[in-house]
Image 1 (cartoon, helix red, strand yellow):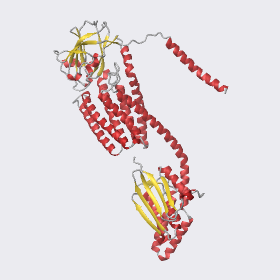
Image 2 (cartoon, one colour):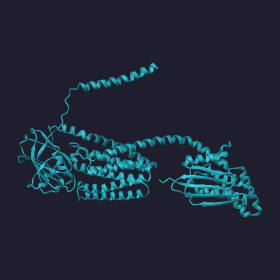
Image 3 (tube, helix red, strand yellow):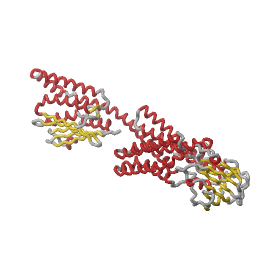
Image 4 (tube, helix red, strand yellow):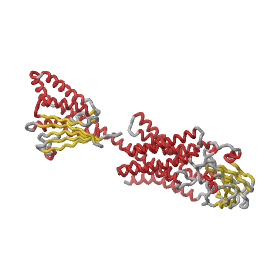
Length: 599
């Protein structure tokens, strides 16, 4: 006992000492912290036509969708010569004048002066850095903002006027400042990319080996990769891909469009019946809209950014429709909430982002990003749980495989009954003189019967019910030779296109003949009935023979090996089960229920 505590103590001591050392270093740290950008407030007025002027403040109706605008006024504090004025420009152009003299003009604003149309490579979200002279609060500053887009970011002008950040010429300060907002999503993007690649590999492996769940894995992998692209390309960094502005601008929108699109198809695969059909219609509409938007952009007819209004509008109604379908499906089947809740949350997040809830220039698409990461974690935990269960099931199946093999052999051997063989051969012998033609047919049935029983010893796979029924018919024709009018057979076969373990039904028919009709004075009837419900295939073997008392049957000390083997094989091979009902003097019903798998 003492040795155990000594070991634990010497394991914990190095960890505690390391923590104390780190705390001490942080406590005594005198290193200068990285300075933050200085925020400069701006006051003034704005005009769309140069004649009618309105006071500018944070709540002003300054919309980028109303056209180009002129804003003039003053900074509330001075800017030193050599400082850098950082502007956040969201798909707009800007010119800056100090006391009437041009200080700065960006590319979109400059090309408009030459009457050139805006190209994709000249527009996007970017930070502009302006090297300033000495600017005092008395100096008049004039900004000329222009917007090429009829649809887009309505708040673009206000974003510029609220994001005046002053830094030294060293851009590291702004970069570190922006990382506070972008780093979590950037790291999440890299993590999603790695997870997406792993999921794609698992999906491809599943396709090659034709494993279950491969379609879900493939869709989840593609969706995760596009979401990763959206997170990585939408980061709020100073110079991140500024040299490839068109790639970043187009990549953000395409990744978002395709991530949302494939999420819709994942929901489609989860829904059922009429709700699945309705979701399919919504997704076909979404696919057509995405296709038209992308083709128009490829042909150069429109800038992709100009189509985002139409995509958001259509996606708003599509997501709203998918939410309604989820709610209706959950209302119809409460258990479906476990499968549909992730998709319900994602579509609600999409609606919130489209509606502009929690909007910030530093956090675009925040609801969708956070929700998807949470949903992916849910899917991964669910998948890990399933892998664990599959592993446990494989170990259990390995153990049960030997039991199943022994059970199959036992059932086969139980079918080769000396009494039945003797009685069948005796009946055939009697027919040889009286009816040679019938004797010949009986010998063929007898040979097929034996062949079927022996072949079951080699068969480890499921067989069709039609094959099992043919085997039963041969057996019953042989028994009919023996019992003659004392055995009536009724077939009510309404469905036979399904699979089951070999020799699952025939032993039950033999029990009905041998222990039911065979023990009743005057004989009786054996009926074989099959039907299909929404959940199961049902096979009923009924006789009106001697029957038995179920309580006595359970306590008679007999092992009932044949019935137990059938139950075990049905359970292990198909999750099916056998139930037997009987009344003494009235007869017995054996009922097999085989779940329908609708893959």
